[in-house]
Image 1 (cartoon, rainbow, N blue to C red):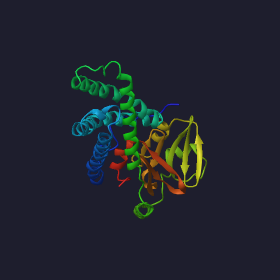
Image 2 (image 1 turned 135 degrees about the vertical axis):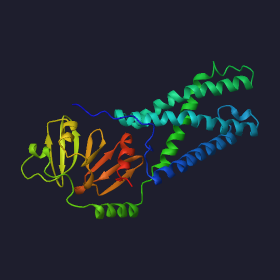
Image 3 (image 1 turned 60 degrees about the vertical axis):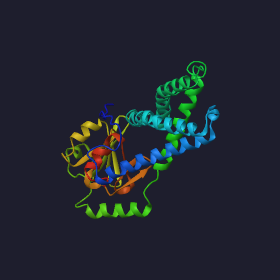
Image 4 (image 1 turned 30 degrees about the horizontal axis):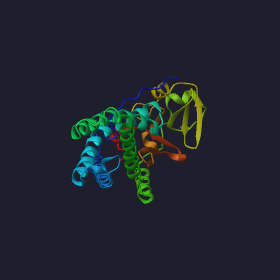
Length: 281
């Protein structure tokens, strides 16, 4: 089956973006930095991994300072891993573990070199490298998991219901694309098309409360839809713009709600494009 190629962005917060999305980025960065510094402070007090012998003030500077350096190394690699996971359908947890293995290498070399200098050749880069590498990778994964839990909060039911109501009120005319070139391949009387999705080698055509399977590629099906009538939200989904009645979110995964209970996923590669249409505002 031929699938459309998705571009790989560095993060879901891309330009162009709404003012609300732009204003949320500094807040998210501030929270992430606070989490890193808080963890660094706690580790500085506890003195794990043999660091307790360092005086307290130096130990706090050591853990908090290298926490910030680690954030600067790990965060871009994590972002790339998230995009790669979405583009290749790799489980996110596996992508994050692989990203931690990659980012932990330069971090281990930095810390090892620092400790070598501090203790005048204590063998950290040779004898203790593997242990320290595992420790740093584990800390990186733990920090990512904590920030993921912090930012996975979904909108309240009240806010979601209000957003859905506004979307339905602003929608004019029947939902979906009617009398398209694709209808010639569908049973007579098939209603307006609200979405297209991929299932194996088939395209699943969604109407309100009815679906039909067609043996064709998604790109060919989209080509038969009126120009400007919809948007591809995912490499395996196309949605009619006027059929969107709301949005939903679970962690970093966002979806567009359609009539009949259908929900179309939005890949991180397409978040900025969908947001630019106003469907996520």
